[in-house]
Image 1 (cartoon, rainbow, N blue to C red):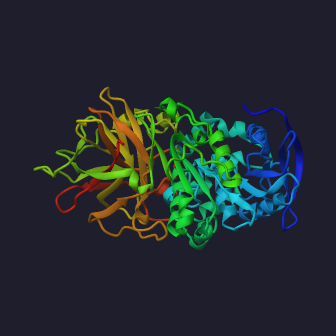
Image 2 (cartoon, rainbow, N blue to C red; image 1 turned 180 degrees about the vertical axis):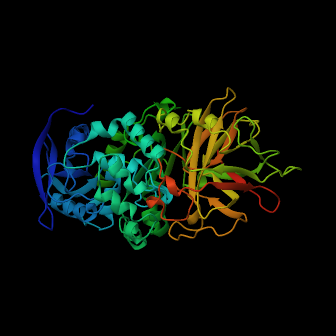
Image 3 (cartoon, helix red, strand yellow; image 1 turned 90 degrees about the vertical axis):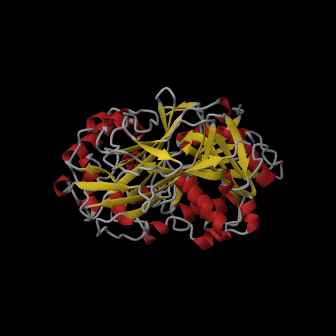
Length: 566
């Protein structure tokens, strides 16, 4: 346990190059024998939120600073999310290196926003930055604020949390309140651009984000460039979770660094993927969001960080947990596995073809996922999506949006989604890696949104959502280039942005694939017209007929990643 004999200095002022002064809380070891490596986190969530971490790291012998980003807490300046942390982080590192308690080596700690701040700081190459350990870091424009170019209502909930100078945690955490706000917004058919005013929180930041609906140079400016990734040569510890909402972002940073960096830099970049949600990447729990995992999942991440900093900055032994560059937990097996690369986690891919002998729009009368083409291919399967149908908004508002086991919406969406099930597995099967899905789809409108989700269905009928992906038709070819659909002929859609999964699925269980529209109180609504999605309202809506083909000329296939049991 951390030693309570820690000295605290409130109100430490850190000068930046433009004259702004940031406010920090400094945690110092009670009786430091000599200057030591120094840690800091850069946060919009108010420095006091990290008191426990400050006490712990100082008790380990590391001076630790919790620093409010500009415009938040007691820091000066204007807050705009993720815009200033890179250069501000550079100035902090170099200022800390000159302090009497610091030995000239500075490292960063933190997750989510603070994880992105680490990448943003590293890309400016402060000379005294010794290592970073980004946890659950978003990649701006990819997974936050608008995943796959599809607006998320959670963005406004988060902007309320960081509104003004102080903490808004009570309002942010009142999920029942937000569910009802988003339900009213959906039922009244209000345009997405008006969401901030509708919930009573007009936001210039939200409006600026909405004005950039696709991945473009606006979003690219928030992330390292290929050349900057190439030049980052620090030891890096990347941590994310199987159910981390920012997993895609964390892995994007990881892959981009490995893609561009030199061989020696790649060797000192380690990746941990645990069975955690977003919060669990810092404080693991054995039960969350309808998920249960085993005791081996409960890593002491603070201790792991201590060992990491001791290794990278003080020449101590490498943390024994880091047996290889990739460490991932297998749910259902309650064990950690190791691999040299993320790609080598998957031993082979099992292709399952979609098939049906009727229109599988009912979960209890579904299509099939088969290994070989069937004599009767069936299809095309189809559903009609009418954006004006808000009949399920009430039910959705009663369900925890993070719950991965609740099936009520699946059973309630009869007629408006397509369902496919595999045969029961004949043996325990380890599914590890990334699903991939190829669909041949036709639509009779210029645009619409699709979500594809994969579930494990146990022998008792319960299910667990394993992974999902979504595609907006106009961005079928590229998330940077918009191209509306001008034909009713089937086109090939590739779902290649599923989240990582590692799960031992027991014999007798099945896989379920669900394909349907995005008609949710938590997401921007596409009214299918091909217009500016954020500006359209319920009165603009057009029903769309979606047809899914799975014949010999149009094979629709789910690729299942099969891992290595040993």
